[in-house]
Length: 504
Ligand code: 4AD
Ligand code: MG
Image (tube, rainbow, N blue to C red; front, side, top):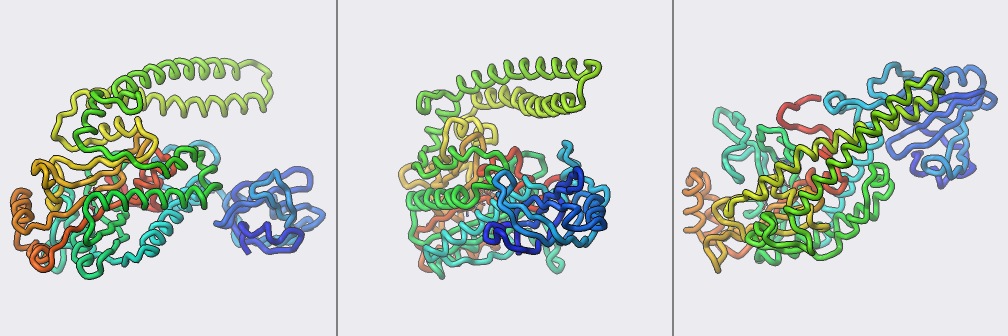
């Protein structure tokens, strides 16, 4: 019996097992907010129904105590979930004291150190359920279309995405690397199965702290024989539309809990603008507008708005702090003002971060050098102008991976595509059409100073039945971060691994 099923048992006696997420008592009643993993429900222990001993025990329960409750299911629209339990019997697995995470605001480092417990909070619960919905929708998308799921090796001998961020391990005395991407193996499998996808962990040593980088992240990499870059982009668009729509359809409660505005997610069904690298660069530099919006002017206006809001917030904080010093003020009113102050301070921290960031974005947009890859701030600048993901294709070949096909119309470009999520999120997908010409792949292997010998097997794919083919890689955590509008990828995975974080 789980809380999510309570509505089916109105008027009946049921047994619930779970943890005490919240508790208060007043005159012969104890109100327990119970959570059991499927949801939360208010459970009321009345001294007249449970008896004095159980009542005292209920009253003594600390946060996160584990219990079993028997009682009757009663409809009450005002309560979380719309139903409550009128308890008749209570037994305690463990009465817990001093649960470290309280209702008051904790710093991020503290919460990260207590990740094993933080996962129980309602916000983390909602994010993990959305992640689960996304994973399931991804499998459904590919399985429905006849793609075969493949598991690529995690110990690899060759670098797929450059040699600078490899994790080296000792493989029986020889060096091996943790996989950065399953793509090269995916290409081999696509020549055997037609269309495949991987869904597995990938590893990159990213020795810097950013809101988009993890050292261990989950990637979904489809690879399709007989697909060119345009068919690849069609598939990416269908894929993201279907997966995000599944979240909107199946997770309304979770999205509401984290305060996500779903209007923007519903726009996912509109076509994704497809921009060439050249167009995207003009937009970043403010030389081309998007629906009347100019990148540079928008940033300047945003900065002005941020500054004036900072002044307002600072003033309101000062006024309220002065006010609660008034002698004789009621406890309730002080608490009310203190909550307001805490919220304003948290808003102020976000505003101050914007105040620091926007001038850097402006600087980097104005000075963007044609021919470079996009940095995080360039992606932020361009995606703030759009409400749906955009696809940027035809990149200068020199800044992209060795395996991408040269554009037959202009050899200076490669047929890569990056999908950038809106609202400032940036790259969530990287992919493209693969080079099929053995000599061109070899030239790129040499240019990237990769060991030719170790790529012989990969070159075989160009020697025996080489066909046009394409694929892409979605970073699961990046997608979850955007869908949930989180400030950082660390909350998108149960136990993040990143620079400076290996525990818990
Ligand atoms: O753009 P990337 O490096 O592309 C590849 O790995 C290709 N082999 C994919 C393919 O064509 N089969 O990485 C793909 C995606 C990025 O767009 C990003 O979403 C995610 O993986 N990603 C990361 N996510 C979190 N932390 C990191 N350090 C990431 N690096 C890449
Ligand atoms: Mg990329």
